[in-house]
Image 1: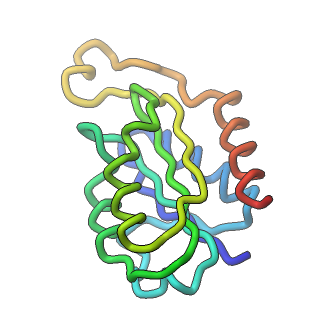
Image 2 (image 1 turned 120 degrees about the vertical axis):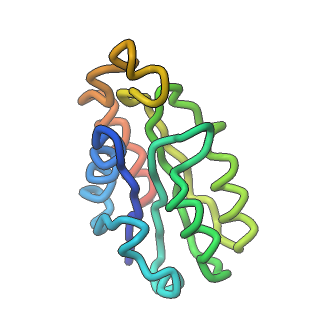
Length: 147
């Protein structure tokens, strides 16, 4: 299976930790959206799209890349880290990949240290997350992608 993970991890490296754990299990490289040629998406059997969540959506660079992906019937999984840790925050990205003809292979999220906006004034929330147990959950999710 040829796989790639496209990840934008900006603030504290939370999402990159998750991306690397998944990549280790499925044998994928991790690249930033700016490093990925959207025209090559159909060359992959499985594509991972992930970032932190900003104002209820994935990072702008990832959303813009998703809009550029060619229509093809490949599998995509979505992941994120955020202060909330809610799958419902994947809706915007999920809608784009569905419209492009991709099959949603699964979604993973977990809480991460969040110092966005006014949270920075109180030291943020979820300090120390994702922790080892959450990273192991990401690996378990990845094992399911290989099945």
